[in-house]
Image (cartoon, rainbow, N blue to C red; front, side):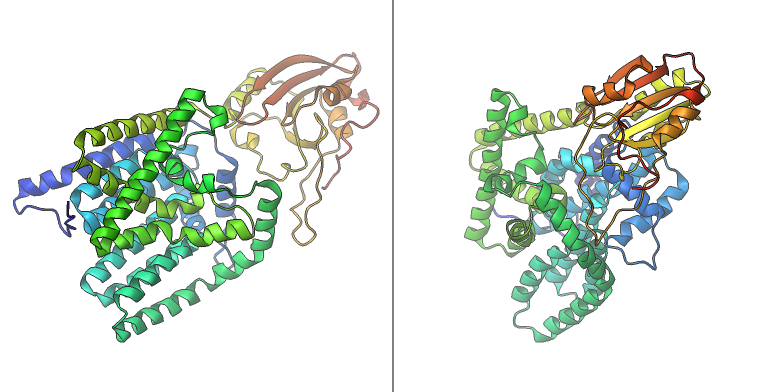
Length: 527
């Protein structure tokens, strides 16, 4: 089969144009349904809180690594601050990613490849996740695809006037997510090869790249400032990269199945075969591209693989940063390669292609079902409802956190709508090791009210334990309190424990003293 790239929908009659746009319209409708479904069902994740905080504190005069998204989110927040509304910004860019993938696939490999690749992206749980997340990854991928589409037009028609738009798109995607600057690596390879005999064109492109570099200097300086701490944190907490992780990237982009340890043997084997199937489709596509030397398809392969090489090298040399969210801007090109491989098999062995298609749809269906039915988020509204349904004047909420997480945003304060104060404590329910922050980058101090003050000024205590150890907690409760209420709220990590403690004695609250031994040795005004 020979691919026929198209620059406009086939057909000259209106009915033909309607027919040609119908498939991508239906795909966009499906994507809209998937992206809006349960948009506000889960509470915000920790990274989403950081996005909100950074948007609220954003100042264009200060150096920032990712200023563009936070500037746009700050504007978006003027019209609403509900979970669903804040995530709606990413939905818009997510739909744009579907359409741009279709356009890029269509222009380089033909209408059918564009439709199939857009459909594969639509079914991707990881794209649904980022389209429903208050983070910059959906937007940065969109801007990267915009720049790619402009560059394709330049390469097709030698339209040098579009160079400025291409450079602007690359600057914007870099200002949204710094690692997206790596998309320039395949860009430069493609441009250098295409215009190797046209020095004037190369000079014009060189000038655009120089100006591009000037525009991203502030962001680059901010990135260099945080890089040591960033890599230090990753080295301390992540396992080294493995070949298996790299080869499983197509599976993560299309299904995002949990690790084999969390799956039954049968399902684990199913996804191992599925991962091999994806690698086989990509191999078929690459074999076809190399054999027939179709230049636009070489571009797709370059955009799919070349940006990952520096990330792979950094993962081996410094710390493992081979994560899907950092590679998301390359995923669309992998979907196009999968579509090419599938079409090649379809035109040779249709029954085999039918089996592969069914296998893929089953896996993708499982991935979407798992995404919509599995949650690792804390059900903060449920916790808030329990408290507000029983709260009384004089109550206080004591939120016990570990030293490591005490500086993280306080999610309870977003979802709790009652009148009680929320007081932070450290290691009230469990002893956890405390690592002092680096001297060069100390965290902002967090206000901790002394426990003795709380016990002397409040009558009942709602204690929310982020980390729980029965022995340590019993030491706090001792003989002074009785547990009137206890509920456990499951999360993807350690469950949260909620207690309602009431003093046993008939003494007034002012005479209540904390238990001996200071169960909360980390309590102080500032930490």
